[in-house]
Image (cartoon, rainbow, N blue to C red; front, side, top):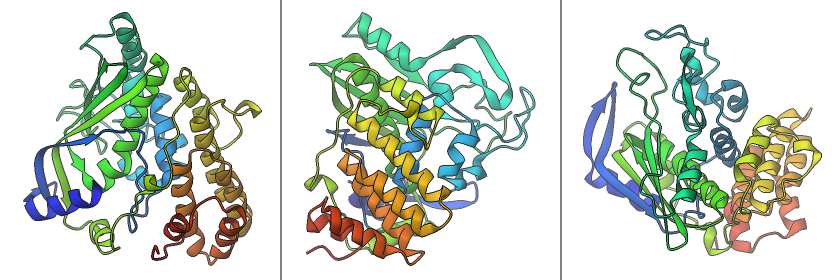
Length: 366
């Protein structure tokens, strides 16, 4: 859906200026995914970072807002940290994000950035599970991320949350989910992070309820592409997409315990959690990806780092994420003249068919 969506906005979107930047925009667009487990985007030219995508999802589900845990995966996020604030009180000096979804999801009523909290703190993830457990046909299973007490003109911030709310319904034995978004940058928001974040949350809830995943819908009030975003041209000139799901199937989460597994991963981001595997092929793959990122950046020299990272990625059972991680490692190695290590690994292990290896190594598919 990504390439047609880019072309649609470029061809039909209105030009609008907001906060000094021009963009093409369509209003009130819904992206519907019949199989939300197919959440890994493999598009030549997009240059996604799957390690960050997985880490940010762990960070959200674990209910965190601290910069220290997530910044090692994406230093660009630092530009959204507020160094000071006004309104409700002094900020935590850039140590926490104002609009962190995890905090609002798991500790509704708390804003660490403003040192503000209420007596009734709610874990909205657990509340959704409780509501549906009590009444399987309920229409009241909802999560709210926008908070008018903090998200108002009197409190300036660089990090205003884009997601407003989510709703969930259990129908015919499957959990359906919908997200409502006030502002969606198609390149950096929807395609890169939002789809991964909220389809994972949907599957986590389904796993906790012991049911299958239904369809996912993402409503974007403003669906836009910035004129000065180089990603658009890079993707459109790359010659088309690569659908990893022609070659691999998504790996479902083990039922029950998904929230606890994410919480354990958030405690030790790039080490073996409690010295044990997580007992779920999906979450164990996430753990191995975080281990690979740590190996890549802790090694005394890049060659050793990429070799250690490849060992972790090769052990992942979730092949869609595995392919994305290999493609990232190829790009990382290419910038350092180390692609021979990745090529040798791929040839030795023979994990993928020729077409997938061609995507990983940025060749033209046969």
